[in-house]
Amino acid sequence: MEQPRRITDSFPRRRRRGPGRPPGRLKDKKDKDKDKVQVKVRDCPRAPSQPPPDPALLEMLRRFDLSWEYGPCTGITRLQRWERAQELGLSPPGPIRDALLEHRDNPDVTYRWVWDGMGG
Image 1 (cartoon, one colour):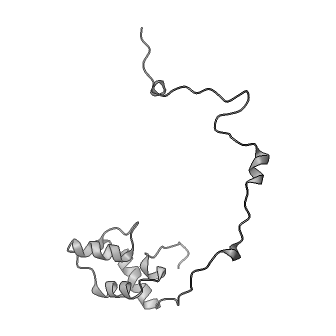
Image 2 (cartoon, helix red, strand yellow):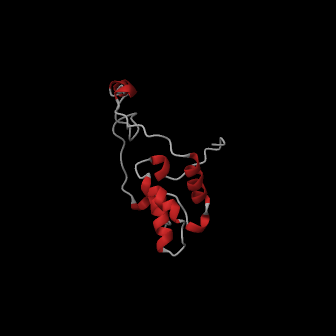
Image 3 (cartoon, one colour):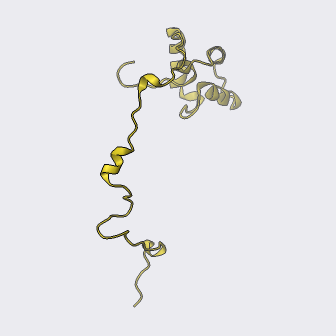
């Protein structure tokens, strides 16, 4: 009687690379320590700090983020979401677009508000 085929039958078999060495392990632990690189935070260039946006503006944008009538907001900027809603005929608020264009370089305004569960 014939044995049933298994999914592993379609993959080539591989042999271990020597006695006692599991596949996928390329370096010894002591070699790994040599590869570590020290990164100093103070050496990294910083983006120019921007003044914080008006709290009323952030509240207006937060309400826009939480309004499901304009579609999901995952993976896109607020302006992209506004434009998509406009193309779909959902009539998003005009002041939102104006604020987004005015503060285009500020990531606090450009990207959606994320609730961190800490009340802020």
